[in-house]
Amino acid sequence: MTENSQAALADPRSSAGPQPARRQYAPTLPTPFTHPPRYPSFVDALRDLDDPLTMVHLFAVLPAERAHGIPAPVVALARRLALEWQAWVVRAHALRKTFISVKG
Image (cartoon, rainbow, N blue to C red):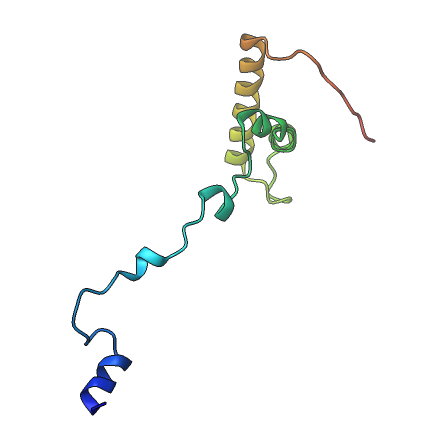
């Protein structure tokens, strides 16, 4: 073997002939395997609304005070979101079964 042929074997870019693309051999993984969705269905997303709705309703009834660091626009937005949620529940007749827990 000559030096040129050894260099051609060491560097596949310099050899003659078409080279297959590297992406052709890359493994393909399905999207759910690489990034599973947090909520696979809409019903699962609705089941997890209890904590965010609790926080929105908590901020809706809090007083906006500088001493506690609660800005007035945050309280106003929380109050508006809570009222819009309650209006949607009433209009859509979406409340069928309830569980009320009072911790105190």
